[in-house]
Amino acid sequence: MSSDRRHRFATRAVHGGQGTDPGTGAHATPIYQTSTFSYGSHARGAALFAGEAEGYVYSRIGNPTTRAFEEKIASLEGTEDAVAFGSGMGAISALMFTVLRPGDEVLTLGPLYGGTAGLLRDVLVPYGVRHRDVDDAELADAITPATRMIYLETPTNPTLSIHDLGHVAAMGRSHGVLTVADNTFSTPYLTRPLEHGIDVVVHSATKYLGGHGDLIAGVVAGPAELLQEVRAHGLRHVGSALGPFESFLLLRGCKTLALRMERHCDNAERVARSVQGHPAVAKVHFPGLPEHPGHELAKRQMDRFGGMLALELGGGAPAAARFLDELTLFTQAVSLGDVESLATHPASTTHQLLDPAELERQGITEGLVRLSIGIEDGDDLLEDVVRALDVVARATVDV
Ligand code: 7XF
Figure 1 (cartoon, rainbow, N blue to C red):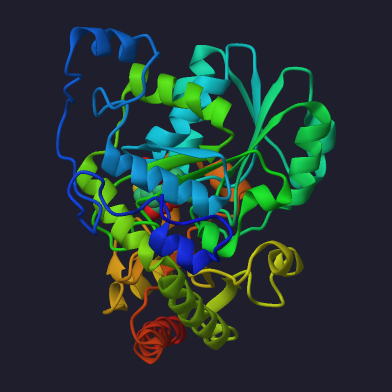
Figure 2: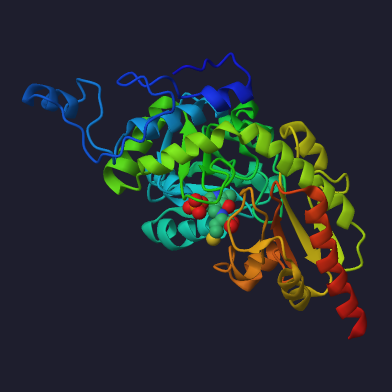
């Protein structure tokens, strides 16, 4: 590795995990597009499989291009190690399969991405894992001897709520419970959960880490000993490995993470401030606004406020549909964190798995629209959003 952890974030984002290729002198990390690796001799093969020699064996379990990405993420998150997966859900399920056993309980501080909620409800609970979603204030009383994991997102998908990482970490530590933060929305550029005492970080690397909307990937970062087990469970047994080409794209994407995040944050702040008070908008969910209930907390645990925002439109489902259909620069699609702006209606897409009562409890209303603000010119984005909101406001007046 050519980067050392004393360097600052942007330097580690460029250099972390990467160095001149020892075999060829290649400056860019090569795409080691191979499924298997020759061990040369029978004796070395046996030693590799017995864990008595180090080296690559098979790309499901480890690959040099993917390893470079893992090292870069460990460097950016400040963790001992990281393991990459073929998707964010691959990463989250690998961690949960590794840590949770029947009878164990996982406490979540919602809302959560609908897929993570679905994994708990449809896979882990039927296997005997218990799951309760609790409010921050209930957490201390909710922990029981069966609690094995406390899990949260920061900020949350899609309502941009902020949970107190330091408080959660302290609760976990005092009860011997593993704490996990999904840092997809913040990225390590804005929040490093370990600095607040959280044990393990997960990411959908599909989002800001890749940054260009052209791959699906995930990563778990945390203590080396636990991650060795996560690699064995998640890759050796379950097998959701990341391909070397995606790892190459991620290495390339992460190099510009600091630059991209600054622009995402600039544009999102601009849009959030400007649409506040618009007649079509009942509420703007953006942690950078002083009115946001998590604003003070966000100032403590985020360096800036991110590129995601959600608008609650006063006109409910019809207003949300009209607004989305009027946007021209935003692609109507799920996912987030791309250089291009994206817009979606969480209740009918990303969180559609949740039943209506749960959606209501989590504040994922029919009028809620989620915007992933890209790195285009901020004036253009703002004009597009305001024009679409004006159409919604006029339509409401006309009715
Ligand atoms: O398996 P994926 O790479 O899609 O990652 C799953 C995932 C994990 N954590 C968070 C906070 C996420 O937002 C996601 C994926 N979310 C996309 C979205 O909300 O648009 C998925 C599209 S259905």
